[in-house]
Every structure is written in structure tokens, then in C-alpha cells.
Length: 501
Image 1 (cartoon, helix red, strand yellow):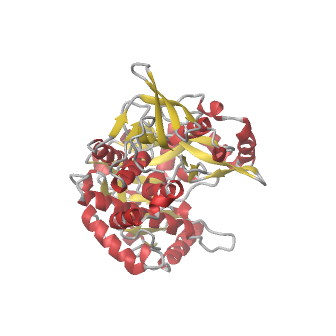
Image 2 (cartoon, helix red, strand yellow; image 1 turned 90 degrees about the vertical axis):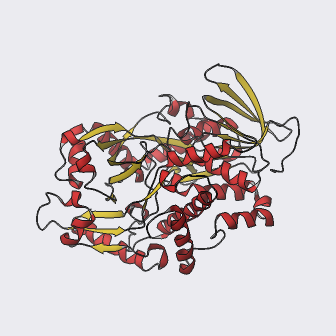
Image 3 (cartoon, helix red, strand yellow; image 1 turned 30 degrees about the vertical axis):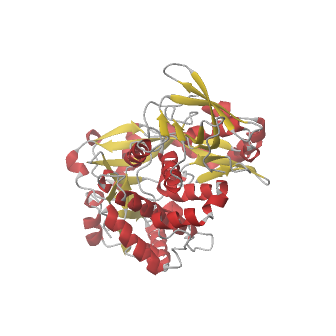
């Protein structure tokens, strides 16, 4: 499928739509595996990584299930479901191995330009949630190497050194507990994306076109995709032919998937959710906190709205955010149109949309309550984490957009999926990525899954497999059942990425 040819009908081998971390990751993987590929990348905005990959929007935690409680739900029988946590942590370990390889090969001057060590903490209040956290800790400790190094405490004397800002001003005797693990990270996916795309553009036969909007996609009888692209500065149109197309446009992926008219894309819908942060502007307060401290989500809240007090490193400077506060919008992108939602509604996804709405009324209620919150209400939510928080030290800022996937379901009409969904045509000539969290943190695993679907023969070839094993030492292996492999790959990747173990 991807064998490079000089066919005059073909403008490029690969078209990537959207200049975010997903397209950048796929582009680098393909170019490392087959250097002679010709790749063109089209981005609607005038800069790369400006939507979901931007650190001031939503990406940035380095999701690895070390502290995110929504990845370890409590089942009806009282036990903790750890399956999603295992999958996400394994995926993040794959990302770190790939980034380590790229660091070794000169993609970055310093890994600290995009990744830094930050402890990951889960913190809860009240007897019920303390009991849940204890059970979660015990369940994760039973897994062996993947979650090695996690600590649990409900002793205020031990909690204070972990997060002094959260402990300031607390009432004596308040029931609370936390887990902490030092090998957590903060990832600036905006900086990572820019570095990957900069390196790609220095490669032969790779071009990035900014302020270029993909208007239509058509599959022709010759097996090629013909893509209509408009230059938003000159308003000139261009038609590009390619063997393979990846739609990695974040919230803009669904409308483009619909325009492709592939059968596999029928029935999908999207539910947009906006977000806001409280950002600390007092350097003295920022310095008191050094962790990503995640709490427990409110009943009915979407996973992306789990409250957290989040240390981030943006352009070499430490920042402190709290949130996000969820809201509703009809836009699919932060720089999108208020008509995005209505224009995405089609006959084939009407049933999915209605079914998902009927079965998620608590989410609708939650979003209405969030939209109705005043800034004082948002500050009160912050004071549950930081009792001494002062209004003048924090300011409200708009975060990014997320579009949750709605899938057709035979029983319920439609279901809301909290995660990412890879949609590929049967012939492997086009793929789209829909959804949100954990997204960027697991980009390498997601793109490998996509490649197995779209380039099956190449992925099974000795040449590609050998290269993949060089880039990702655990490729094709199960980390969960091989704790000695976890230690080996983690030690190597942390050494090259200059991260704490």
C-alpha cells in the first residue's frame, strides 16, 4: 500500500490533516520506517499545535493512570477495575520509549524542552473516598512492576510534605488520604509536536502547509484519495491526490470523516465539551506546589472534568492550574464555528445522537450546572483543594475543546464513548481519530494500532518490525506480565529523557 512510486497521478504518498501531536507522531513513525515517503500536512490555523496539543488547553498531564481515579472505577461488587489503568500505563511507557529513541537521534536539544519529572498524586476527602483510595492502592500494588514506587498515606504529618499548599489551613481531624508516585511526568505536547514537525520538515519530501483547510475528500476509481484544499490567505484552491489519508484534526475530525463517505464512518456523532481553568498568577503560591494532584470526579461529570491542581512546565516556566471546569458549546474546536454541532448531524447518526442523549441525562444536568457557575462558585471548588486560595491570586482562562465520541449501538441507539476511537476504511486507505482523553499521552500506541490496520503487510515485514523494535524495545511484548521488562525499558527511557525513577 505504501510502496513509494513515481506515478505522475500521485502528488504524495501520505496526507496528514491537522498539525497536532497525532499527525506529527504518525508522520515521524512512517518516515523512520520508510524514509522515501512523500508526506504533506495541512493545518487550518496559522501555527502548529494550537488546539488540543497546546499546553494551555487540555493536553499536558502525561496521562499514565498513576493518579487519575476515573481510570480505576469501583465495580458493583466493591472491587477495583484496573484494566484501563494497565492499558494506559503500558501505552505511556511505549510513548516514553519512542521519545527516548528520538532524543538519542537528535530530535531534541534537551528532553526537558517537552518532558519533566512531576510527582503524580491522588487525593480524596471523606471516609467513603478514603476507603476507595485505599482499595485502589492495594489493587495497583498487587500488579507488580507497573505501579512500583506508589505510596499511600492518611497521616497529615506525611501528607504535608507531599503537598503543603493543599494542607495549608485545613481543619484538624479532617479525614483525607493520598497516594504519591515520584516517576510521574509533565508533558508539554505543544513543544513536543513542534519539535517533531520541525524535524520532519528538515527531512526530504515533507511539507507542512499552514492556513490550509481541507474542504472535501473523494475516493476515485483509481484507488486514490483526491483532497480539495483551500489556502485561507490567498483563497486559492488546490486538489491533492494521495494513497493514504489520516484525519487527525482533533474536534474537526468528525466533519471530515463524514465528508469521506466511508461506510465505517457511518453512525458516528460528537458531543462537544468546553473547558476553563483557574490559573495562578502569584509566583509565591506557584512555588508551594510541585505535583499533579487529582481528586475524584463529581457524580455525572465526564472523565475530562476530574478536578486537579496541576503543576505544568510551559516554555521552561513553572505554572499552576486548577480545573478544568466543564461547559457546553456547539463548537468542535476552540477556533471553530458555532455551527459545528448542527452541521455534523446527519440521517445516519440521528439515532446515535438521540440514544446517547437519553442515556446520559446526568451528564446534561452536570453541564448545565457547570455553565451556571459563577466565578465565585469556581473559587469555592478550588478552596476544597486549597483552603487558603485568594481570589486575587487566580484568573479564569478558556481551555480547549473536546468532542466525545458517540457510537451507534444496537440496543441503546447510541452510546457516549469516553476515550479515543480509531476509524479506518476496509481497504486501509484512510483513517480518522475521534475522541479525547487520554489521547496525546498514548499517541504512539494509537498510531501503531492505526498502522497495523492500514499497513498490515508492511508492519509484519522483517524490515519494519526490526526498526520498530529498535525504536520501541518492548514492541510486541506485554509489559504487565513481564515486570523485569518494565524495569529495563523504564530505566533506559528515563535515563535518556532525564527523568526521575
